[in-house]
Image (cartoon, rainbow, N blue to C red):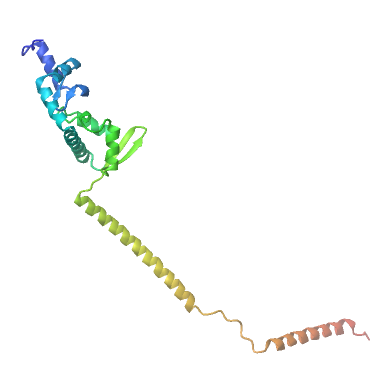
Length: 223
């Protein structure tokens, strides 16, 4: 099919289409070429330039796959850290911003078949905190820069200091309570000037005396 002449409606329409996002399955990562439809992608696949690139890939597929995967990971983490920092965000939201760039490296050229697999990889590698919810996968970037590590260490040190101070204060209070109990004067019983047995006798004689007086008053003969 002949190429549309510049300035014609068809050429303008083609230019507008080329500026928009195209389907991922019609993108060739080895040639970094985006085709607009299936027919264009088939024509590209049989082109000599594509065949040369595929021959290079066939010689060392692992090398290219690792390179593409590393580049995609770096691009994703760079956007995540700069755009969202350590905030919790949907992984799909970050991915949408990645693919919004027409020149981005496509994930279908990496070792990850799905975004879920890539997110799980980030969690296992300790790059992000990941959590699966009903809305999808949430990710939270872990800042492992020297400055961030120093800040976390300072916070942990401060927390440990507070804990140690509280423990020392509790220990001091307990020691003061023990000391107060040891130095506390024992309770003394009332001092008596008579032996207990003598007191018992006095009580009994007093009781007998009052009983005698009672009988005298009530049983004495009347004149």
